[in-house]
Length: 244
Ligand SMILES: NC(=O)c1ccc[n+]([C@@H]2O[C@H](COP(=O)([O-])OP(=O)(O)OC[C@H]3O[C@@H](n4cnc5c(N)ncnc54)[C@H](OP(=O)(O)O)[C@@H]3O)[C@@H](O)[C@H]2O)c1
Image (cartoon, rainbow, N blue to C red; front, side, top):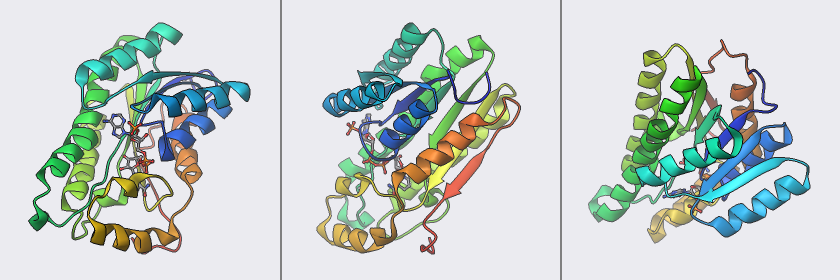
């Protein structure tokens, strides 16, 4: 199946920011979207909005740190629509702090959501896609997968890991399209996961140039809409006004 129309697309972390806008954009272009996150009130509102606009959407509570939950999410998508064409592993958190602050719980949270969450998405979707004879896995990394900033070491490490995992996955499969979308600073709720007051103030300034989440949604749609034999391996989308 080429293009976007009719594809079954599961999106993790669809309750805000990039995931929410990707859901709207893909549904507007005819995809059947299956949306997961922990804040189901947000997902319900989003599904209602998509369906009111003539689209097709479903939602299910999802914690990407739990493999069983991710498997149930993918099973829900296939039970609703009979197949899974694309999974967008988008859920992420970014509690930044200097390493010396020893916010070890936050390091673990980033590892659990940003790395394990992506691996769980792959583990849940890959068997379904192999059985179907193809599919597409889109992992949301970051420009933080390409460089490192002080106070962002662990976050950057998780995004470097997403790039490495995606590249390995791509090389291991001929009938699977693997795409990394690496956003630069984008308007969303991501900075709210940072608890360090000093870093939050710095982030406010750093994020002044943010581009709207629709820009990342369009990049995701571009990767999806290519013909089956074309794998857009990575797209970096950043503010024109940002050196990062
Ligand atoms: N915004 C940027 O500047 C930027 C730049 C580069 C990369 N990114 C990446 O883009 C992705 C989306 O982030 P965003 O910017 O759109 O931020 P956001 O508005 O904070 O969205 C993050 C999403 O992840 C979900 N999430 C967090 N923990 C989860 C968990 N355990 N299980 C399921 N869902 C979980 C959140 O939903 P619930 O809280 O409802 O579960 C939310 O829907 C992330 O991977 C982020 O690292 C963002």
